[in-house]
Length: 142
Image (cartoon, rainbow, N blue to C red; front, side):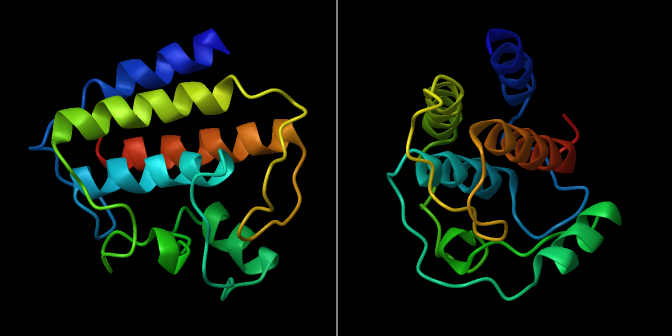
């Protein structure tokens, strides 16, 4: 887990408030909070209030085409529904803290159902996490 954590932290540390998105509507600060909310959800610190609007098949089609998969409205930074940004430095530190906490979870952790995929095994949660965070770091060129 340390290699995975270190690789992501190296990329996260390259972000600055001046980074612009290559795609999508979030700015870099909103993206940090959105990704942190993903880990807050898995850690049981955040709950989703809405239901998916796409089927699993539609999600896979969008992902395969490298298109944006709509987030839960509870985590939609553009709509102002996610955790509001504080300072850039604080939100960088918080993302790294929540990522580390997620990667150190015991496999016996009571993982919540995924918004689109429902019940997932711990290894699948790690794969979804890697995909999600990688997608958003690429969004800002790191």
